[in-house]
Amino acid sequence: MAVRSGRVLAAYATISVVWGSTYLAIRIGVQEFPPALFGGIRFLLAGAILLCIALALGRQLPRRRRDWVTAGMVGVLLLTVGNGLVVWAEQSVESGLTAILIVTSALWMAFFDAVIPGSEARPTLRQAAGLLVGFGGTILLVTDHLGNLGSAGLLGPVGLVLGAGSWALGSVLSKRRPVETGPYVNAALQMLFGGAAMALIGLLLGEASRVVLTPASVGAIAYLIVFGSLIAYTSYVYLLRHAAPTFVGTVWTVLAMGIVLAAIVWVRQAQPTVLPAEQATGAQRSGSSMSSNRSH
Image 1 (tube, helix red, strand yellow):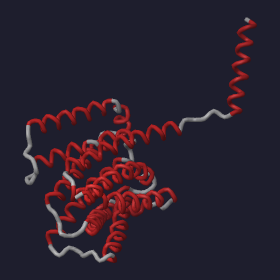
Image 2 (cartoon, one colour):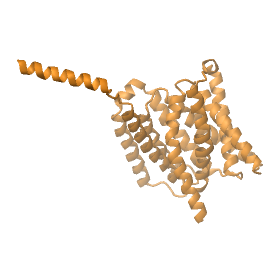
Image 3 (cartoon, rainbow, N blue to C red):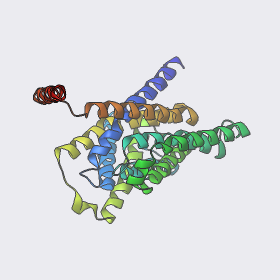
Image 4 (spheres, rainbow, N blue to C red):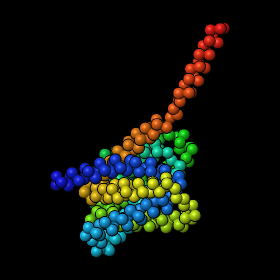
């Protein structure tokens, strides 16, 4: 039990640290790569790599049809809809607003965990009140970003909230429908199903003609495959198996804080610097102005 608790905490810490950086990678990638194919290629490659590693280590594919159905259903909810809407929305929504809206995943997860049969605890009025307060707090935070909402449009923020809800629903259903396979094979199959559905959507939307391979887009996909999928997503699947959904949902609060802090650092570093020549010019102008004032 102590070993399992240590692994749960390690998975939690891994997700909190790694996934905070993936939103920036997504933001970079979708500037030059169509969103559905961007996500689809990422998850198809990551799923194939992880499945090959798992099979080489002696892991077995599911023997029950139910496990295949669960992997497909959860993969579509988590990745095709949940992550897909985030990727699509980040074409127009800045990271600060994204950080606020993804916090709703924790609220959605608590809601679905309370209402979907099989919960460890019955829903109470206290839980309902807590959810209302949480959603109210999210609305208050969003009011500070009304200017960004106006420039980005409402579709992006709405897509983020719906994506958060789909991710939470898939997470709770994954907990309600346990599979016999290990977390590595389970995560690989979810990525393959979710990535295939996302790539199909991209092809149907005609995104193939808009694919542009640049160092930035390829680097973003590579980073997301290794860190966002093989490391963090596999940790998330493990965490769902060994922790309550409401506990898992707190990851999003930590992620939101991390994204906000990263955005602050990014903005601070992006401020224009004053070159020495400009400083000298400014000092000369200031001196001339002072001399002029004294002459008057």
